[in-house]
Amino acid sequence: MFYAVTGNNYGDEGKGLAVDYLTLSGHNLVVRHNGGAQSGHTVDREDKRFIFHELSSGSFNGADTYWAATFFPDLYKLEEEINDFYKVSSKPVKIFASPLCCITLLYDVYLNQKREELRGPDKHGSCGMGIWEATKRSHSGFGVTLGEIHGSTVNELALHLSEIEKEYVSLKVTKFGISEGLNLDTYEYAAILKDALEKYVVLADDEQELLLSYDNVIFEGGQGLLLDEARDDLWPHTTCSRTNLTNPVMLLENHGLKLDEAVYVTRTYLTRHGAGPFIEDPDLDFIDETNIPNPWQDKMRFGRFESSSSLIERAVKDCRRNSPGTKTSLFITHLNETDDKVLTEDGDIDLFELKHFAISSGIDKIYCSRSKLSKEVKTSIKG
Image (cartoon, rainbow, N blue to C red; front, side, top):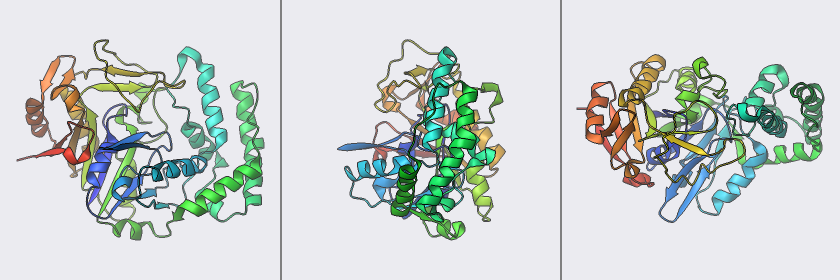
C-alpha cells in the first residue's frame, strides 16, 4: 500500500502521530519528500516522546527512512538527531536517499535567520532552518547533492564549498544588507558532511526496487496545505515546497505506481506557528510541548475553522485534483482537548455530525485520535 500523510492546514496537525499509526505493523518505508530538518513531528509512547526532523516518524516501529530527491536534508544536524533517538529507542536507524537530494548548508541557515531578523515586524514566518535559502541556492546552480558528496574527497568538497561561499553566499550577504558573513572552516565542515553521509545514509541506486521491497510506503509530508508554495493568495507567508500530493504522486508515477490512500491530518481547531494572517481566538489556550515560542516563529496561535466544510473540502479538492480515484481520509487529532468537537466560527461541531458530513462530502475513511498514543486511534469507514 502507498499512503501519503499530509497536513490539512498550516502544519502542526499531528502528522507524526498519523505516520506512527500507519507503521504500527508490517515492514514499512517512510518517504520524506518536502522541506527538510525544519519539520518537528512528535511521536509519544507511555514513557517517552521524540520529535523527528529528518528521521521518519515511524522509527519507533522500526520503519526505515527514505529521502526523496525533493527533500533537503541537513547532514550537519543528522548525527545529533540519531544520537538523541538512540537515547530513547533501541530500534536501528536505516536511512536511504536519492543521490539527487540537494542538502541544506550552514550558509542557508545563516542567511535565512539574518533575513528574517532584518524583516522586523514584517517577518514571513520562517522557522530559521535554511530551507528557503537552500532551495533558491540549488535552483541557482549552486546546489550540493548527496551523490556529489559521495563521489568527492573531503578536499574536493571543501573547495566546492569555498566556491559557493565566494560566488553565491557573499553576494547574498551584500544584497540583503547583512553586516558580516558566516566565518566557516570549509575543510572541517566538509569532513563533517562527508562523515555523516558515509556513516548513516545509503544512496539508492534503484528507487523503484526500494519502494517495492516494503509492505507499505508512507509519504510523510512537512507543514500543511495552506503553506504550499503554489498558494499565491497567501504569499509571502508560505513555504518553498509542495506540501500537497504533488511530490508523492510524481515520484510514484515515475515508476508506474499509484497512491492508494491520501491521509489529511487536522486538529479539532486551527493553529499557526509563524507569521501570517490568522484569526486568533483569545479564549483558546492549549498546551503544546513541541511548538514552544522561538525567535523566528514567536508563539503558537490558536483559532477556529471558518466552517467544518472548509477543512473537509480542502482535503477532498486536493486529492481529486492531484490524484483522482485515490481513497481520501481525514485523520482528526486532539479530540480529547475539545470534548469530541471541531471548533468553527459558526459554533462547535459534534464529531458524529462531522463524520456524517465528511463521508457524504467525499471522505472515505476517518481516523480519530483522543490521546497522544497511536495505538488508541479509532477508525470509521464509509458504508
